[in-house]
Image (cartoon, rainbow over all chains, first blue to last red):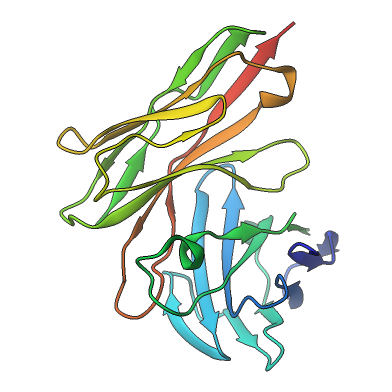
Length: 119
Length: 118
């Protein structure tokens, strides 16, 4: 079974530009979550999508947005990039549905991340 | 708000020895999950072990076990027979159970960097 695939793995942008990152979840997984990892702030939750709907959102400015497609693939977009947006962006998928009290829906599988550098 | 604290930024262990990583958390909720994730230099976050708060029995996965003290809000990870491949950043994480229809996001600690000496 293929894992969570994130593209691109590395990218360099300049301030003011925008960037789109892609995440393909494990086949059959319907929930995709995004996290930002920086040395200073650690791992912070951005948003979660399930069946093309955002159902949970972290405390990030509106420059950070995302979407999910009907095949569960997700993209996140950061507009008007700032130096502080330099980070590792991690995507995680999970089955996402059903009774959350049972183990299967509660394990997040992470991708290897997209390393964004803003100059 | 829920918080997760890992008080040991770095730890070191001799190969084949045992090491314990500490984690405390703060929550007013009673139903939640706790996790330990490992992030090697390859950057991919890998689930090590999971504990449901409603279970009193401590979770165990091969060489990895936890000491879950719900009243003390403590969730430490013990690695037995440490191996070179265990060297990584270890993150403790918390998530609410049945968070309003969503799965609830993971709240991570700052991590503990574990080195394994041959």
